[in-house]
Length: 127
Image 1 (cartoon, one colour):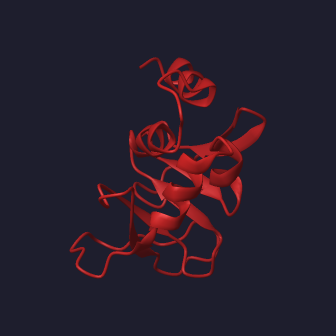
Image 2 (cartoon, helix red, strand yellow):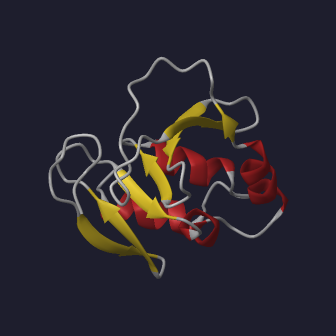
Protein backbone atom coordinates (compact mmCIF):
# COMPACT_ATOMS: atom_id res chain seq x y z
CA UNK A 1 0.00 0.00 0.00
CA UNK A 2 1.25 3.50 -0.80
CA UNK A 3 1.07 6.40 1.61
CA UNK A 4 -1.74 8.82 0.70
CA UNK A 5 0.38 11.76 1.78
CA UNK A 6 3.88 11.19 0.38
CA UNK A 7 3.22 8.20 -1.92
CA UNK A 8 6.00 6.09 -0.37
CA UNK A 9 5.34 2.42 0.41
CA UNK A 10 3.92 1.75 3.86
CA UNK A 11 4.73 -1.19 6.11
CA UNK A 12 2.30 -3.25 8.12
CA UNK A 13 2.92 -3.31 11.87
CA UNK A 14 0.97 -4.86 14.70
CA UNK A 15 -0.30 -2.65 17.50
CA UNK A 16 -2.21 -4.43 20.25
CA UNK A 17 -3.16 -7.27 17.87
CA UNK A 18 -4.39 -4.76 15.24
CA UNK A 19 -2.53 -4.42 11.95
CA UNK A 20 -1.73 -0.81 11.14
CA UNK A 21 -0.11 0.57 8.00
CA UNK A 22 2.75 2.92 8.80
CA UNK A 23 4.75 5.29 6.58
CA UNK A 24 8.37 5.67 7.67
CA UNK A 25 8.78 8.80 5.53
CA UNK A 26 6.02 11.02 6.93
CA UNK A 27 5.20 8.87 10.01
CA UNK A 28 1.50 8.72 9.13
CA UNK A 29 -0.75 5.78 9.99
CA UNK A 30 -3.61 4.19 8.07
CA UNK A 31 -6.27 2.27 10.00
CA UNK A 32 -8.79 0.15 8.13
CA UNK A 33 -12.47 0.56 9.01
CA UNK A 34 -13.15 -0.79 12.51
CA UNK A 35 -9.53 -0.78 13.67
CA UNK A 36 -9.80 2.54 15.54
CA UNK A 37 -12.60 1.11 17.64
CA UNK A 38 -10.47 -1.96 18.38
CA UNK A 39 -7.61 0.22 19.63
CA UNK A 40 -9.80 2.40 21.84
CA UNK A 41 -10.65 1.27 25.33
CA UNK A 42 -14.27 0.19 25.55
CA UNK A 43 -15.71 2.77 27.94
CA UNK A 44 -17.65 6.06 28.04
CA UNK A 45 -14.65 8.15 26.93
CA UNK A 46 -14.17 6.14 23.75
CA UNK A 47 -17.91 6.15 23.02
CA UNK A 48 -17.96 9.96 23.36
CA UNK A 49 -14.92 10.26 21.11
CA UNK A 50 -16.46 8.10 18.36
CA UNK A 51 -19.71 10.09 18.64
CA UNK A 52 -17.75 13.36 18.29
CA UNK A 53 -16.45 12.50 14.81
CA UNK A 54 -18.10 14.73 12.23
CA UNK A 55 -17.46 16.21 8.81
CA UNK A 56 -15.21 19.27 8.80
CA UNK A 57 -16.74 21.33 6.01
CA UNK A 58 -14.55 24.37 6.73
CA UNK A 59 -11.21 22.63 6.31
CA UNK A 60 -8.92 24.11 3.67
CA UNK A 61 -6.42 21.28 3.86
CA UNK A 62 -5.66 19.39 0.67
CA UNK A 63 -7.84 16.31 0.30
CA UNK A 64 -5.84 13.09 0.21
CA UNK A 65 -6.79 10.01 -1.78
CA UNK A 66 -7.73 6.79 -0.01
CA UNK A 67 -4.91 4.24 -0.40
CA UNK A 68 -7.50 1.53 -1.11
CA UNK A 69 -10.07 3.03 -3.52
CA UNK A 70 -8.07 6.12 -4.60
CA UNK A 71 -11.10 8.41 -4.13
CA UNK A 72 -10.67 11.71 -2.31
CA UNK A 73 -11.18 11.37 1.41
CA UNK A 74 -13.28 13.74 3.44
CA UNK A 75 -11.89 15.87 6.24
CA UNK A 76 -13.35 15.14 9.64
CA UNK A 77 -12.82 16.51 13.12
CA UNK A 78 -12.75 14.48 16.30
CA UNK A 79 -12.66 15.19 19.99
CA UNK A 80 -15.07 17.02 22.22
CA UNK A 81 -13.95 20.37 20.82
CA UNK A 82 -13.02 19.07 17.34
CA UNK A 83 -9.30 19.57 18.00
CA UNK A 84 -8.02 16.78 15.77
CA UNK A 85 -8.58 16.84 12.00
CA UNK A 86 -8.37 13.53 10.21
CA UNK A 87 -8.99 12.11 6.77
CA UNK A 88 -11.72 9.48 6.36
CA UNK A 89 -12.42 7.49 3.24
CA UNK A 90 -15.80 8.45 1.79
CA UNK A 91 -16.32 4.74 0.99
CA UNK A 92 -15.60 3.84 4.65
CA UNK A 93 -12.33 2.01 3.97
CA UNK A 94 -10.62 3.68 6.94
CA UNK A 95 -8.86 6.68 8.49
CA UNK A 96 -5.58 8.47 7.79
CA UNK A 97 -3.68 9.89 10.79
CA UNK A 98 -0.85 12.35 10.24
CA UNK A 99 2.13 12.09 12.59
CA UNK A 100 0.99 12.17 16.23
CA UNK A 101 -2.75 12.27 15.52
CA UNK A 102 -3.46 8.64 16.41
CA UNK A 103 -1.74 9.10 19.76
CA UNK A 104 -3.89 12.19 20.46
CA UNK A 105 -7.08 10.34 19.55
CA UNK A 106 -6.17 7.34 21.70
CA UNK A 107 -5.40 9.61 24.65
CA UNK A 108 -8.77 11.36 24.24
CA UNK A 109 -10.53 8.02 24.16
CA UNK A 110 -8.71 6.62 27.18
CA UNK A 111 -9.98 6.74 30.72
CA UNK A 112 -6.47 6.78 32.14
CA UNK A 113 -3.23 8.62 31.49
CA UNK A 114 -1.38 5.29 31.22
CA UNK A 115 -3.33 3.66 28.42
CA UNK A 116 -1.65 0.42 27.41
CA UNK A 117 -2.22 1.10 23.69
CA UNK A 118 -0.82 4.65 23.92
CA UNK A 119 2.24 3.29 25.72
CA UNK A 120 2.69 0.63 23.01
CA UNK A 121 2.42 3.29 20.31
CA UNK A 122 5.00 5.46 22.03
CA UNK A 123 7.35 2.47 22.44
CA UNK A 124 6.99 1.49 18.79
CA UNK A 125 7.90 4.92 17.49
CA UNK A 126 10.40 5.93 20.21
CA UNK A 127 8.46 8.94 21.46
